[in-house]
Image: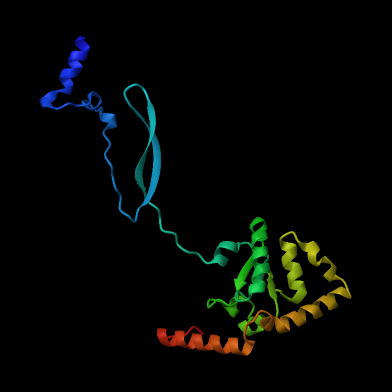
Length: 225
């Protein structure tokens, strides 16, 4: 009875009826909400809160996390190893070609033997690739060995595949008359590659590249030789 009277008195403070469970709130139940700026990245962390009676409830609090901005990197810089044994010159604007390039890139992650060079890039430099200019390399596949030897056609594919554990695919092309036949078939593909992939003739592509380069030179008042 004494306990009930005490509780009743406490509930009638100031003539108002109050819930006894709200009279005293422990400090660990007093939550302060923080709203971080909209541009910040939020992380939700769960931690326990105890109520009278021993019940345990998970409460999620919001905290800010700082994220360093990502600096975009060129794909070739990420994929090409320092100690390469063969360099693949490829046309990055050729959709069918890129399927094979991407497959080799994926395989090369385990081998690190191929350096990939996109000849369609504005940064492509013939001087760094045995003097092979854009027009020449657009005509057929070219690869450069570490010692500077240039290989073309099916032999280039065979050398590249050998470097990523797929040498068996082109192994038969080492022998005659298979070597001559496969080179002839590839020559037809190389000749009509642009038409097959729905691109304009090489002369039009060269003209467009020259025009774009001239415009860039005029904008910068200088031109890279």
